[in-house]
Length: 330
Ligand SMILES: [Zn+2]
Image 1 (cartoon, protein in one colour):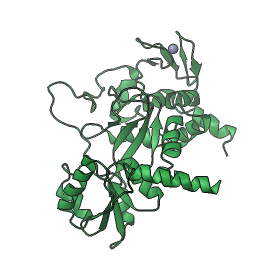
Image 2 (cartoon, rainbow, N blue to C red):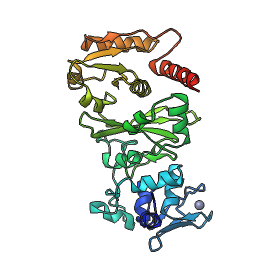
Image 3 (spheres, rainbow, N blue to C red):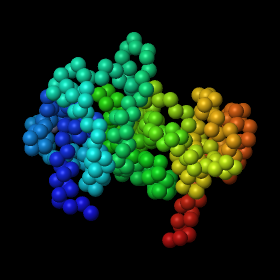
Image 4 (cartoon, rainbow, N blue to C red):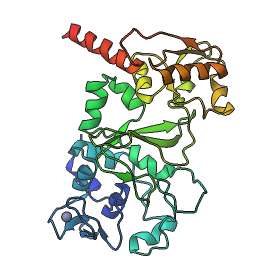
């Protein structure tokens, strides 16, 4: 359990570094205040006391308060977030050192979400930064509602997939502009070796915003590749169209990946799937049918399964079956 000493240790994490990890831009010990509609930085960091205070709205606190507010989470999650690793990526180290001291030269000259006009070079996603967004498995209320109440997913699957959430919009590049909307589920994409390759957001709010967002330069066409390490030759692997259908099948004890589109697939993507027993229950709509037919062109062993009528996709079917099971049990 947490004791006072541990909490004091976390409260001593350099507050400006924590603020930057939370997507705030800190310059000359100041940042835009997230508590009021701030246009000119009025939140001030006292690095000696390791606390913040806004001289406009009066909000003040320490490291854990800041994490709780920015991530929209409770005390326990904030502590987990801070303790999730010894914060090895604090931006106040190495060649970016000048940034926190107020010099501007070190500002990253491009942002993946919004590239500079006239620049056509696409940079790979900022994995170091993205990993700080998904490192702590913080699930806020919206995420819990979506995953557990609506989709009835298994908590072990959610943890295994490394799902996380954000309560505040944040950039996809450390010093970039805001890119991910909030509240959003944060969905890490891994390669076959389990290395993070990108993070997709799934918007959970009520406003009219794009539902899914992927940082530019992301080069991943298959979701859930990390499971291939556990699929033995001759074993079944299911293919779904979207992530949440994939989580539904994983929750049902199947091994599954998601391939949202066949048009982007390259030979290298398909190669590891060639010798597996593949199954798919296409979404009950035209795009679902089209995806199945296109995938079968490159993966001829793909077996088609039919969803019972009235269910749009695997996820909806799973949620229904699961809630029936829960009804019987209670
Ligand atoms: Zn304020």
